[in-house]
Image 1 (cartoon, helix red, strand yellow):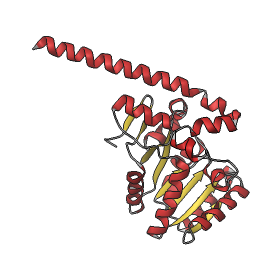
Image 2 (cartoon, helix red, strand yellow; image 1 turned 90 degrees about the horizontal axis):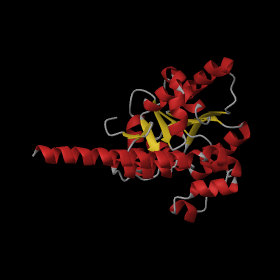
Image 3 (tube, one colour; image 1 turned 90 degrees about the vertical axis):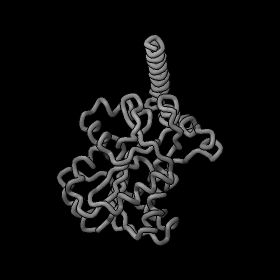
Image 4 (spheres, one colour; image 1 turned 180 degrees about the horizontal axis):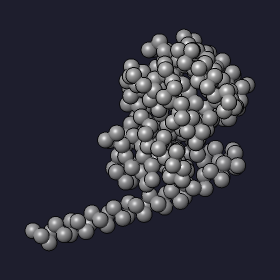
Length: 259
């Protein structure tokens, strides 16, 4: 997309929640499956290392600014004022849209008990929602054709992939051409765990202060191996900003000399 922003080695779309959901509404009336993936600082390190993931990520139809680090980086590098669009909340916005548009959904991923519990929770939160089918995330490769057939037979227009990254991006890249009714496919990672309450989200005050990442680290120290890239990401953003500023100063100096 022409307005897509480059953030170091990945990209993000400059959208707020309302704009993002309107794009999804448009996808629902398209003629092919459209992918939605999350852009966050961790992806800046994982995506460039994997050519298949790189291609799937770059070709995504919507890259939502999921992490606060991406939001801040977009402001520093491009002067863009973005709003964080957390995947767990955006998934439920899409569910609300599905009710409005009378579209059914299919949920693939997570453990079977988590998947089933999430379906039950979604039916409580959105009584009119049509969940056409579901599957746990441990389908062996030899049964993948049968799973794709089940998704198509369900008639679902929206597919949620709760497989984690990079599995969900790679799954879409491998099977998008086989999907016959799906128009929207969102990679939702561990969202089902948050919906069922097995993973607690940060209290509102932490989220208002954009510190959900810190709350999750304090409550689950095992996340340190993932979040250790955050200071490296921040340093690289500052270095890129300084380099850009120096280039602007040199260009302005050359322009003044030529006058």
